[in-house]
Length: 99
Image (cartoon, rainbow, N blue to C red):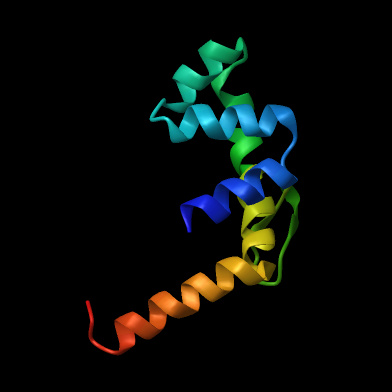
């Protein structure tokens, strides 16, 4: 699963997004990532979670978020056949009492 996630990251994110993910995944905090890249921490938060449009709301009344690594990866992962195959195998193992 980890291999497939990194494949998706390499194939679908911008060079800067990849940089942020790799640093964040290595255990650095957002503040540490920001210092390393010479930006402020809010830039890293926006890069990961996207921007929030507080003027427009979704059907549940929540502000609409757009962009960001997390949202982009969530969408791609849900549609990726290799990831879904792995997740289905994990679910089968769990359902059959192996764990």
